[in-house]
Image (cartoon, rainbow, N blue to C red; front, side, top):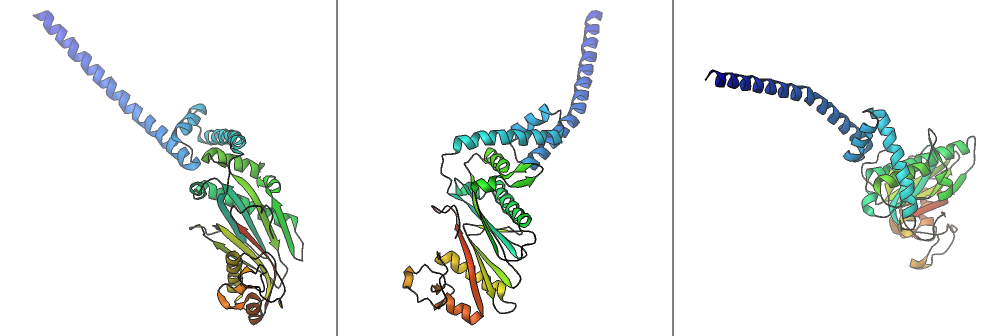
Length: 309
């Protein structure tokens, strides 16, 4: 009887010890797990990579989030170059036109992907921004002190060499985005224009992407270089001219006294003016006291247009 009582006492004390030890383990383990989860969530939010890859990066880098982020970018870029070579033959006819107009200068670019779904992705749109502003920076650097009209066309090979800062090239950023999104992509072409005092740059984007405050993106884009126009109305004039170029797709400028050739007309000035078909573009410009000097039109995915007008 006494022996039974002793065994019961031992079992009771052992259970208490186990319970206390378990509670202490839980108590000390929860903060660690919570901290790791918070770090994982932060890395996931800042990079956009999967939870599995973020967890792997943190473990590999001893939970140093800065090193983990760098490691993820390196791996994504390697994977992107690998994917880029594998996907190179796949058609990339979707994408976006990017357009930015600054002070007496403007840039328009075309960046392609395989599907409209990826074109709506924020990471792809960030790539379009990177291409646009890298091209503008290149234009500004190349044409410092230039006082006349400057127009430059850049093909894919030229664009891939542009610098994004900190040693990274557009080719590197393209590979990184391919690695993240898993589609073939290409930075196809760009055009930059710079104008002297007294000249203006009109622009228009059709099928625009909402929520873009610092630049415009869409399926079609146009830049129009012109002189004159009524004071305070040049922005409206430039937008209307850009809208016409996008909608009517002229292929040459023509002359102010050209006679129109009907619906098949491909010269800009004798075409019926899109916002007001009762007059030609030339007639509208005469009324506004303006003159068009040049224009460029991009359509995303159009065949045989690695350059620009």
